[in-house]
Amino acid sequence: MRTESASHKVRPDQADIVIVGNGALGLFLADELVERRAGSVVVVGPGNRDAGASAAAGAMLGCFGETTTESLRTDASRTRFELGVRAHDRWPEVTARLEEYSTTGSPLLVTPESHVVLNSIGATLDTVNYEAMIKALDEYGKPWAEIDPNEIPGYRPRLDTRALKAVHLPNEGAVDARGVLAALENRLAQTDTVLVDQTVAKLVRNNGQIIGVELDDGHFIEAGTVVVATGARSEALVKTALDDFDTVPMFPGLGFAMLARRTGGEKFRSVVRTPNRGFACGLHVVPGPGDLEYYGATNRLVDTVSSVTWMADVRFLAQYSMQQLDERVASHEVVKWLAGNRPVTLDGFPLIGWLPLSGLYLLTGTYRDGFHCAPLLAEHVANELQGKPGTIDPMFQPTRKPIETRTIEWSIDEYVEHNLAGWFETGAQAAPQMTTNQIADYYRNMAIKFYETMNIDYALGPDILWYAQGSLLGARRVARYFQRLARAEAQPVGA
Ligand SMILES: Cc1cc2nc3c(=O)[nH]c(=O)nc-3n(C[C@H](O)[C@H](O)[C@H](O)COP(=O)(O)OP(=O)(O)OC[C@H]3O[C@@H](n4cnc5c(N)ncnc54)[C@H](O)[C@@H]3O)c2cc1C
Image (cartoon, rainbow, N blue to C red; front, side):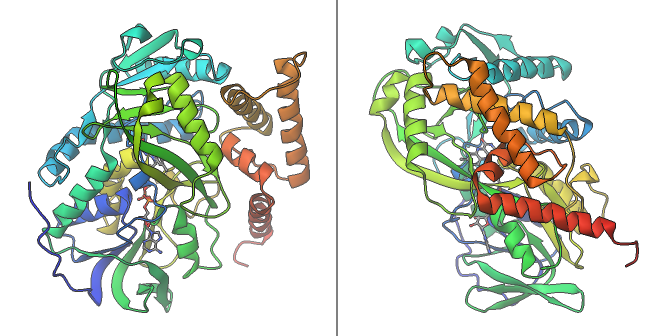
């Protein structure tokens, strides 16, 4: 184990590349650039990673376990899905390389495998996503096996929410997110890279190009290239230098998870999770590090980034972990509450590429699997920064218009399905004579009314629709963005 040896480093005035943001994307990029000896690198970000996603992540190396009916339905979603497939292959090498720098005393790869359980507490969304996962596994020739849920180590749900089906994914595990971040920092500290424990107040431009960043105390770091990787805060930071530029809007996907110590019963030895469901990544437990277990995760799109946790989310996670994963969870000792904001874009796709200001690069929008994709994206971005061809599809460029993957009718159907899944999982009550179709109609009418009021013809994903439907601020942001887009398109070329 190597230890930090560079705490004496002084805060620099200059760097070839300043990476703003010390989450998984920023740190993996710094690591890649250092490997390539790509010049002097400074990473700016608060040591406590306030409200960041990476430090709250379960860090499932989830790819097929994340499959939904949407994953392979369009060319664009397939391209996105295959990012995950390619990212997956990197991790054995990544963990082997970082292990030497780990300070946790337990392996960074907390488990190499997952079990995906199909229980009936959600709604049909679980079933169709479970089937989509098996279809995708077969299509990509990946190993899986159906397993009796009773044979999953640690899995002891309440009988009325037990799974009748489960799949074992021998090659999809999870890493210790906080351990990986610490190991990356430790590794970088052995190099000339400087990690600045501060925030960037604004990007500084001059004559149509970026010239550096100004820190929260006014200190200026001059830079040839600035990479913005500040997660859910990226759009706001970009606006400090490009206030007239409209990238695809971003929203914080506030998530809550818990790290807890088991006090009895059989331990989990693999990730155990439901399929993606009800606007979120499914309920899951990740074993480790050490004798801890990670329970996650909620997802709630909100107006502003914060590190608070909703009481409703605490109830949700505690109650459903007990019901759906292991009854013994009730006596677990929670040692850490984790809250972070996923960087969610309006179209659900990442924002990766050069911005229309020379020297300014954006790396964000990775939503639910940014930890998993970080090493692969680091390689791509490092190439682009060095003027070499990128290694991923250019469709994620931040100068794009929102990617279209559905019709309005499809969007409404998806919204209904996700709400029904949420309705049943949360045990919502309707009058006893009310049918599921009537509940579905209630949500359908809500979505129809939303589209009529908004007067947009872009079809939103279910999570964005849920958010904009319930937030006046969110609805206005979405509506104004499309109005600006329409005005820009109506302008004659060259105007
Ligand atoms: C509860 C939860 C569970 C998740 N589970 C998984 C999972 O199992 N697998 C997976 O692959 N992904 C998961 N994700 C998603 C994943 O965490 C994100 O996609 C990814 O970590 C985003 O990384 P990032 O570096 O872009 O952003 P972040 O991790 O948010 O990092 C951004 C950093 O920038 C800093 N910052 C912000 N503003 C400034 C500023 N002005 N100046 C300097 N620094 C600034 C922040 O403090 C933060 O440290 C999960 C996310 C959450 C919230």
